[in-house]
Length: 213
Image (cartoon, rainbow, N blue to C red; front, side, top):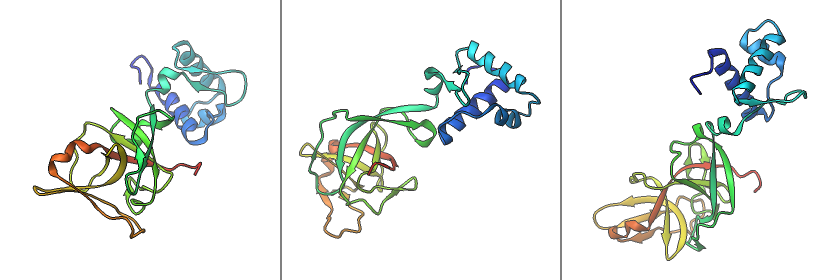
């Protein structure tokens, strides 16, 4: 939050942001009065006018019309590019990094916010694995971070023969293994050489439900 905001103004912005995130609409003047312990609507309006003047919010004469300006909302919301699909099964989906859409994700939902992208999961080879409480099931979005440490047991995105696949990572001195974690017993591990580490393209740091599937 910018330092130039007063404590009341900071509280007001947080209330607006939380309402927009959770309800899809801004709070009413009455709700702001109660939450901020301000005795009159005029007192709330004066704070809103100050935020408008500072370029923090926009509003109209309509009810629940308060919006955070894009530069302020961007402090909390991240645009994550969807770069196609990753197979949770036998590697079959070609990895071409073509942007097919964008997810708007609250930054606090992600443990890492730099150098990340999303992929839609195809297949059921990881449908028993939970990441941050959400299953890696067909149709959901996997959020992948590049250039971060990967340890045994992490879920990774691997590129094998130019095809993308998501599996659990395990490595020792002899072999690197990509394990499925599925209710479907047809899926088997993929065995690679320890020198094939460049096939590991990133780590899955979060999974988001896809309500459209």
